[in-house]
Image: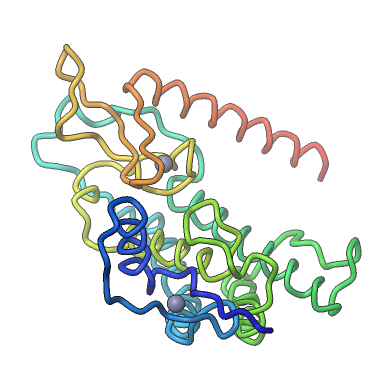
Length: 257
Ligand SMILES: [Zn+2]
Ligand SMILES: [Zn+2]
């Protein structure tokens, strides 16, 4: 007999909460869940497809942040400029590389599982001279296989969170990160911080509430499920270490060329 499965997507957040309360306190509820078709519901398939389709434009917008240098200088920033050490590539480059890398990984994963690419002979990313075309190509491939990915990928049942391999969860995470990076967010008023060392998302910000004894703000991750918290010194050390390893990578690539 075919067992009906509930959709692991955010469509069932309220139902999961109600079920939890039922288990914990025996409180009955009348919420009915959205069902997988067979793994995920049509609403989640449609929404994540929209997220995918929006990514090429969003990634261009993220890249333009670096080109146009949008992080505005706050008025009265004297003493604040250069608060944190700089790193090569800027936050926008790191975010693009991370997301495009994960998109390419999911593409290879799907195409190998479907027998279109062979393990070990899949095209490497090499040097991507035409980044927009490269991204457009990956998105088109993912869209073409999305129905399969959402219903038959081995991780299609996984709960949505930042560590999830569920293709739907991954697309939502990419979308959320790029929208956050490009929208008018309070963090635009100050300098962009490096990606979070724990969840790798662009959510690090100077905490408004948490201050060290000397009045210096903590650096906090804005992702609820991550919750990384660092002192300014820890953050500065992290950026310095990242800069060093990136510079070493650059030297290595130069030597190899
Ligand atoms: Zn759903
Ligand atoms: Zn984080």
